[in-house]
Length: 115
Length: 112
Image 1 (cartoon, each protein chain N blue to C red):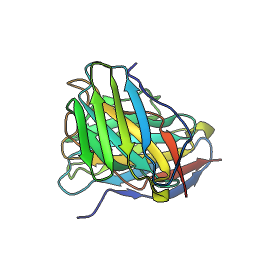
Image 2: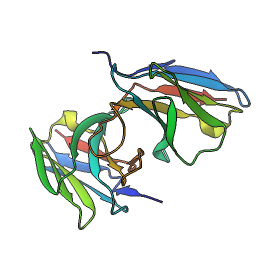
Image 3: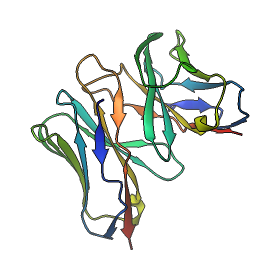
Image 4: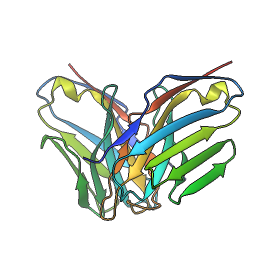
């Protein structure tokens, strides 16, 4: 069974640009969560989607948005990039999301560098 | 603000010793608890999860949960150099939340 697939693996952008990251969950998983990981802040929750609906959103500005398609694939978009958006962006999928037993499995991540 | 706290380390233990990693959480309604391991430059991988008070063992790993004291720990017996990684504690908060909140991780170094 294929794992969580994130594309692209690496991105270099300049300030002010926008970027779209893609995540394909494990087959049969309908919940997709996105995280931003930086050395200083650790893993921070961005948002979670289930059946094309956003159920939870973290404390990030509106420049960060996402969506989920009917096949459970998800994309996240960051507009008007800032230097501080440089981070590893991780996607995780689970069968249905939420407590108590839904285990999240992570993709390899997309490393975004903003110059 | 629901928080998950971990000692950032580094925690150094000799090969063959027991490594003890601790995590506290602020939301009393938290229902389930996960330990992930993350090697440098890699993504987190699940080690164990626990949702009932007490101990849960899987090979060299034991997770311990104490809901009254709001802490969860991970013991690694017979530590190996390959266990050197950052260990992340994660918590699902109460009903209606689909957000998994992570601690900042404890860096473990196993010395040969």
